[in-house]
Figure 1 (cartoon, rainbow, N blue to C red):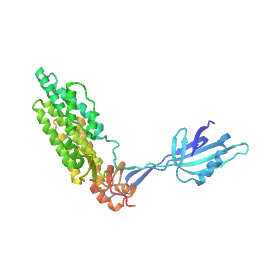
Figure 2: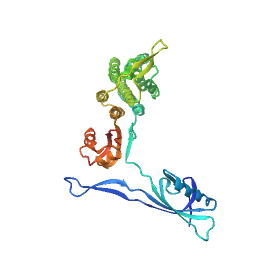
Figure 3: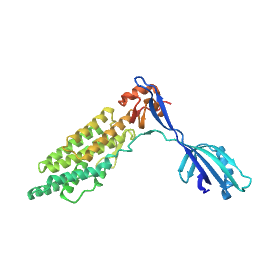
Amino acid sequence: MDRMPATIDGFECEILSAGDETTGSVAEHKLIGYDGAALEDCGIDSQRYTFQTIWSGENYLNHFAFREKYRTKRGLNEIFHPVYGLLKGKIKKIGATHEADEIDCVSIDIEFTEEGTSEFSTSARMRTNTRSVAEVGQEVADEVVARVSRSIFGAARNRLNRLKAAINRMESRVNLGVSIMNDHVKALIFPLSIPGIIAKNAFLICASLKNAGNQIANSPKNGLIALLEQTRAIGQLFGRTDGAIENAIVEAGTYLSAFMTEEAFREIGERDTSVVSLQAGSVRSVVEPVEALSKRDVDEMVSTVRRSTSEIYDAPQALKEVALIVAEAGREALARIGGERIVEIKSETNIYSVLMGARVDRARAFDVCLRNNIENPNRVIGTVYLPQEDF
């Protein structure tokens, strides 16, 4: 019979045979107004394996050290199986057998239980399926270029001349300093065409609005409003020359306002109550207070970004995605402000199982359902906001 090489807690041996057993766990709930039992899938019972291992030749003496380690080891064992790969769990039982006619060879039967995986995944920032605003930035830029291209397609010579003159005025307004927003815009790629140059300068103009950018850093809600107002005012100014430029500036400003909003949400609970900045013409550091965001501020900032996006006629799809990202970032910010945790429930279950898995007292079930707009406490799935652990 063929033997398969394996490693158990670092000890090399051979596996002669292996078996595994998988059973499901189902709970039956008796509910008022429910005929029969409401079945709840509680996942899979412990995954059990049985291995018949052979320790012979050079590996024979290792079985003494392996048995001693089994008796004294605390924590999980690791088995690297040639078929199942790396398995982590606990060896529950071993049994050694020596045959009289075999020299320097021992057979050890192993019962092994694999460690389970939690249904509840918690994180301060649960964004596994959601991109950040910055990750969508290039798509927004590409769509702005495409919209400008469609707007000026087949334009007459006199319109092209006006656009070129407007581009020169746009470039004269760009005065970028050092900031996270400016660095992000500089990293975006634009084609060397008239639409590409217009879109690029639209982003650069919005990013160079230093007063609004600094205000967002120190007073996020007021700074967001100021940035949007300034970009719309500049857009209207250039709109007197051509509507395509105005639209590009408004779209770029809306995107960058969302970018800075997400950054403000990201820093909730992560930054000190003060920031250090350098005044122009001075080498002296000045400490300025940072305005703390309230729950109402977060809600208003999310609404401002979404409203700004909805006011754009036929807004680019990537810009609509950005608004959704900001909304999710806002929900996470609210959770951090309220000392909550974000929990992802991967398969439908009841609220009491959720609370037990998250170590929250079951007496809080009503409040948790109210907080998450859960209508049926026996059917909970998706993102749930929970208080901190009780036990």
